Image (tube, rainbow, N blue to C red; front, side, top):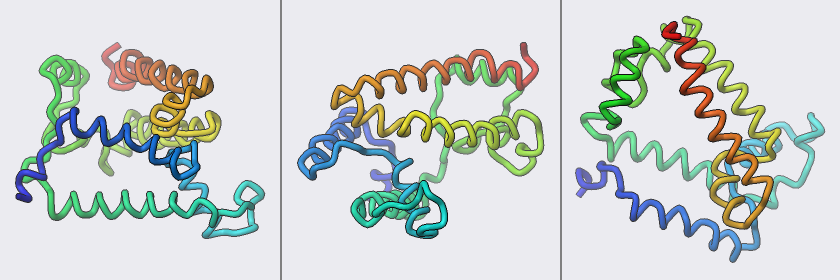
Length: 189
């Protein structure tokens, strides 16, 4: 049974389950779903009254904190009880060849060590992708008033124009990073 659960769920199961989030939120009286708001709530609970941005009634959205704890708990269960003995992400042969042409050769784990490792972090590409990219993602989520999951799942389904603009920006940024930034960082351009 556990061996069956360690395989990725097919799109026709996972997609509708994700799609059910929005009607459940609407039934619960909330139109917003996303993780960036949850992180704000954790900061407000941990340091109440110290920073103006975190001064609000964080207890009202307690379900968001439960969401974060559920994600952490689910990840712990998946990493221990449901872990695959061969945690390799399946990518297309064309993508594999493109990454090899950039000098990325470690395809054993979930993420190549050229991206995420202590030695990779000390390189210019690793630093730019992890530290600078992480800052830009965090800043962008706050500037766009939400993260990718919030805008793409609940924002688009409730016909919010700002979510459409944000999602188009997310995709454009991903295309620019993939086709322009990665080749420059890995010296292939």
